[in-house]
Image 1 (cartoon, helix red, strand yellow):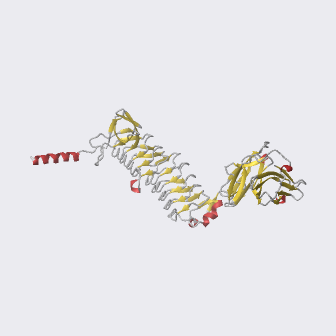
Image 2 (cartoon, helix red, strand yellow):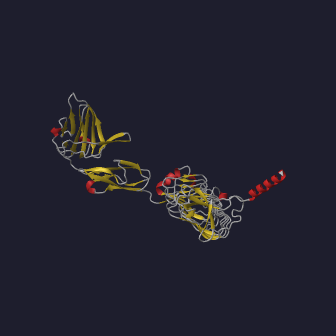
Image 3 (cartoon, helix red, strand yellow):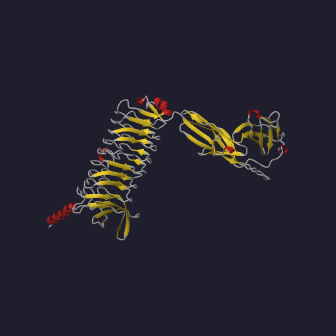
Length: 516
C-alpha cells in the first residue's frame, strides 16, 4: 500500500514538472484573430504588458497558436469589465514567431523588454520605435532579417541593449536605413551598434544632445558626411568606431567631450570640421587609425587655442574656417535716450567693456539680453548683438520723498542703485543748508554742526556707479575730474540721511546746481 502511494505521488510530481508555467494573468483575442497574453504590472494604475503564454523552457508558445501576419498591439485591453493600458512588451513576448509580417506598437508602450521580437525573421519593411519608448532590452529585435528600415522617434530613450553582443538590432543583416526624428535628445549606448548593412547616410536631428558609447560602432557601410548637430555636448566612447566609409565629420559648436576611439579606424575619413570655439576634451585615441595628414579645420578665432591645447596638438597644423574676428554690436534701442560706448571687432578672448550713457531725463534699465551690469565687461568668445534699455525719469512732486535703494555687491565694490525715481520737487540750495557749492572751484561742500556725526559721504553718477566715498562733518568733492552730467550726493549721519541731485556743467560759469 505504501509503495503504491509513493508511486502515485512520484507520478503526480512528474506531471507537475512537465507542465509549462503560465506567464500571463489573462488573454484576449484580437479582432484580427490572434490571441494575445497579458500580465498585470500595476493593478492600481491598471497597466499591463504583453507576455508569451509560457514563462519557461525554450518554446514560449508550446501548445499555443503563434501570432502571424499583421500584429497590431492594442493600446488598451479590457478584462472582466476593467480597461488596462498596455505599457510594455514583455521579455520574449513574440520570440520565435516566424510568421509575423508587420508590427504596430502603440504610443502607450514605454518599455520593450529583452528578446521581445527575437528571431522574428518574417517581419518585413519598417519598424517604428515610438516617441514614448524609454528602454529597449538586449537583443529585442535580434535576427529580424527581413527588416530594412528603423524609424526611431523615441525622444528620451536611455537604454538600448547592454553590450556589443546583445544590441537591440543585432544580426538584422538587411537593415540598411535608420531615420531619426526631430525631437530625439539621446542616442543610447549601443543604439545602432553592429549594423554592418547600414548603407544609407544618417541625418542626426538638431534636437540631439548626446551620442552614446558605441552608438554607431561597426557600421562599416555607413557612408558620406556625418554632421554632429550644434546641440550635442557629448560624443561617447567608440561612437563611430570602425565606420570605414564616413568621408567627412563636422563637430557641432557645443561639443565639449569626444570619447576615446570615437572615430577610431574611420579609414575613409578625409576631413574633420570643428565648429566649437572652445576646444572640446578629446582622447589620444579619438581619431586613431585615420588617414595621416587629413585636415582638421577649426574656427579661425580659435586656431591658436587648438594649437596650444595639449590634447589637440597632435592634429596640428590646423586649417581654419570662418571669420577671424568677433563682432560686438552694442547700441541703444532709441538714440534719443542715450548712447553706448564700446563694441566693434575683437580677437577671440579680448576683453570687452561696454558703457551705457543716459541722456538727460533717462536712466539705465538693463541690456536686452537680461544683463544689468553697467559698465559691462566680458571676454569676446561669440558674436553678440545687444541693446541698452533706458527708462524715462519723471519728476515727482510730493511732500515727503521716500527713497528706496538696492545695494549690489559687484567684484567687491558696493554699488547703490535707486529703484524709484530719485527726484523730488525742485528746491533752492537753501533747502539743504548743510550742502553747498563752490561753482568757481567746481566743488560740492558740506558742513555739519559738532553735534552731528557724519558717518559716510558718497557721490554717484546717474547710472548708479559710486564715484567717491568719504566721511567727516566737513569736506568737499572736486567735480573737475568728472564730465558734464547728473550726479547724486548721499550723506549719512548718526541720525539722518540727506540726498541731493547735482547738475554739473564742466563748460559753464555756473558749474553746479543743487536740487534736493
